Image (tube, rainbow over all chains, first blue to last red):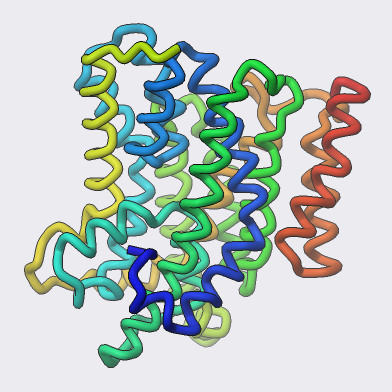
Length: 247
Length: 111
């Protein structure tokens, strides 16, 4: 999708490239360590490369690899990956009005390349879906600019990680750069009191619910944070949800 | 090194389908349909919640428990990254400042 000229010709595409460029280093470090981890957990180099190229979902890959190595049944592996990816289902509900003007295959390809940070940057930049075809196309171009950088940074770094798996010590913990990138983006989203409440509730809930299998703690955390913020919003009707136009 | 188990290949392709299905879950149907209003309002809190849910456990937990020592490079790195963001507002600077604190503590002191 992001290779389409109609996107690249728009200024919003390059704005997206610049925005996502600020986190490319973190994404790269994360991709690198995911590549290393896949090979160290038992995939061959070829299998790890195929998984990177086809699956393109780091947390699901890291969940699936040990199960593949242990010979788990296919349906168990797929269910696990689905659960680990459940947050994307929430994101797709959010993005639906922005993408429904496209034919289905383009929507699905757009969704496939939209990782966590592309979604977050997009939702921050465009709180409301465009009202005209031109506006929607510009929003789509911004999304694809983000996705292009995310895709390239992730893929290149993952391939390097797979090839150099035995030369990069996991004890260095380079993947922490990815967490710092998310921390920076999180800070940039903390633009209203209720947003800060949302982050606090979600962080605490994710820790408390850590023992749940399949990273379901993330879904529990999102659901509880959103629910509590909606209740608080209702309880304080005269303070218009912390400045309204934020997303 | 270049072995490819057919069953593993099938698993990988099926996992790719899971990526498409989850990331495009609500794009699959063409039917006109909109989210209820409360859900639309609620979604504005979802991005930051999703990030916090991923980030916080990665900073304060180890082996499934809260860290019990302050000698953990991640705590200081996160504090440094957060301080940088508060001061300068740049995500790249947050990563660099955090890693500059993290790597010496981690590799040098073994925290």
